[in-house]
Length: 466
Image (cartoon, rainbow, N blue to C red):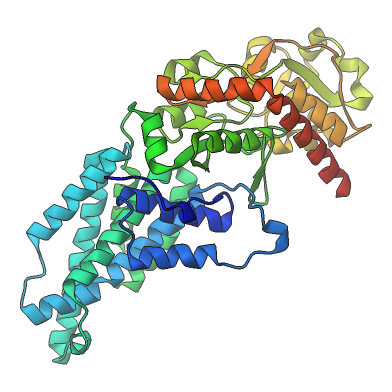
């Protein structure tokens, strides 16, 4: 089976419209590129959607939310098709349950799931739940037509084979969404649940159907290990995890991702001949997301830890630095040595889950440790006087000092540690080899340093403009 995409579908897919096109293209890949009219129409509609001149080059965005929305929409579409299925069975006198057809669908789902690194059993269970709901919808239509004494759609029936082809296409699009979503994050699940409840009501299904379907969806997991690089090339998609809270490496602002590591991820994807799809992660959840197989590579100014190294693989280092101190400029002399950090009247602020918090927990025993959940808001806390000092990487301290001149300052001229930024990836040596090969060329050309300085200048200019 060929897994090469149509060149027209292999476009830049990092923006809002592009993210949906990625899902359509992935569905084509999963289906062996036998595109149905419905899939082609989706792709054409998205590709021709109007965009302003300011967004001709699409901004990078997280794909999780779009994938979840697409999944729920396709579930709704599948249930809507049950009216035509019910009509075809009404005309032929066939029973609602078609055991042979259901078994065939579930078998093909299992094969597709395995090719995408999804667990076949839990994926089948998710689709089996939908098949059960589909039977319920068909039965409701039959009951209504019996009561009315007339089957309205039977006057102009759709061919059962044509309807089944549309159902098969819908299944493939669901698998494309699951490839980006599984295992489902809590925040994505909450939004999807609200949408799922609305669809269940629309099809007049029992209220608990949405809960059961969401439970099955949350149980869809990935199979550990496997040939990750082969799957990346087969799907033409590189799943890139990033936190979106760590400028100048990765920053999510109003739904748009930017930063040095976002651009490096795009360059890596281009080198591989695939499209980058950005998936959300967090510092506390990064190791769990790696363990669960939610991404192929992660770029977000990521440092080395033994826990992560035990779960995945690291690239060569592309940036060197270390931890330093940042505080209000008025407190420059108060925090110009490491010893001044650990005093009872000092409030040391940290973002949770990363190497910043790890350093503080290991070295600060007398000062008050203030955990702030969003790394993007840490520096405002210091400026407002609700915290005194932060331990962070020297590059972030330099950026924040540039963005808030005269307000925040790097108070310690050196570094407290020596650190490296690396790409974290799934445990596939073949993927690691290709990433390191690309990275060696990028480093030789000065790309990581250049992208970092571009991001620094962009964030400083953006701050000054506001």
